[in-house]
Amino acid sequence: MDNKINRNEFLKNLGFRGASLVALYCTSKGLSSCSSDNTVVPASVDLTVDLSTTTALANTGGYTIVSNVVIANTGNGNYVAASITCPHENKNAIKYQGSSFYCPEHGATFSTNGTCTNGITGKALKIYTVTKSGNTLKIT
Image (cartoon, rainbow, N blue to C red; front, top):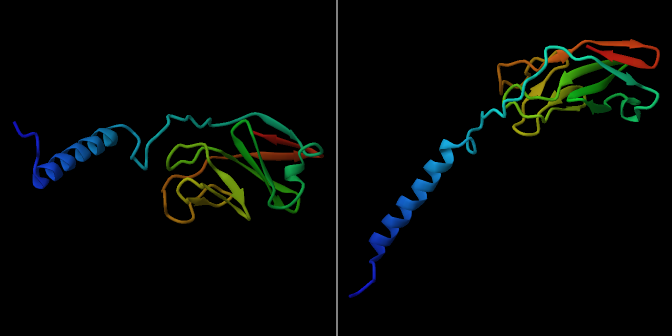
């Protein structure tokens, strides 16, 4: 008995197996660009940050992450705080650069009021209230 298979049958078989693997993978959340990791963004937080010990906030454009909140120095004694969770993919990836928030996972950018500035998502980034008193920031 000859166990040889012709080239056409081999390629069909290979294509079918490959398509089956892709279909299996796609049914999981692996290929979905808008998959959710079920992250819940709290409506409010209650954080206190001591500016005298947080060197990352000493200069304009500097930022730090505390308890899943990105806190940034926007200059002239002003600060902004946002959820670390990107509203597009629900991944904890938000960073601050220059004068806006961005998600390095897919390139969405957000103003300091939370509006998406490049159209990647219609959802706003959660922005928290920041109150400064002396060297202390209160984020709620």
